[in-house]
Length: 232
Ligand SMILES: *[C@@H]1O[C@H](CO)[C@@H](O)[C@H](O)[C@H]1NC(C)=O
Ligand SMILES: [Cu+2]
Image (cartoon, rainbow, N blue to C red; front, top):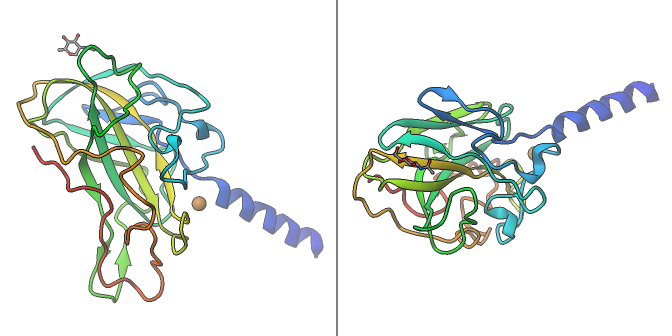
């Protein structure tokens, strides 16, 4: 009796700690190798999320690995994506930020500091006035979007995040799964991406879309955290 219960608790613990990472991009329909074009994050083994939105690790989560990646070539206007190592089984929402590497710097060595990040994609929760709330990315292992056609040529960091909201009703209850990839954009335009934000800095952790009880009462609306998406 005790043994069975103990084993059941153990396997539950194993399941709930099996989170996920974002080791690959999808470029021209091809999924890149794990941690080839994405900097290997501290949690590559533990898969543990970031919960402190003011920590240095909230940007690229590489304080322990100090990882750099290989920069991958991509055309503006093409479909790109993020591929995870497992399903995003937590209810949550997605944002994708990018930052242009300053001239004279290199994507592999630039740290992404400053008010330099803009949002290129988001996947919010879907609400209907309080009857249901659903999360389009839940249980998905990848997502794709279009790189703005007007993006200026050059090197960029790209930082996807999933904000898991299953236990987000208290401060720092939301779990952030994130990573930084390295892109070299060509075929682009002369757009001025914005609004620009700093990471960390973009969130306080108390936004209505981050500190939220998604179960009761069912939220009538959902406010996606962060700046508006730059569409080019
Ligand atoms: C970025 O792409 C341009 C155009 O293809 C190329 O000339 C340049 O060498 C590339 N830079 C890097 C760092 O890959
Ligand atoms: Cu979790």
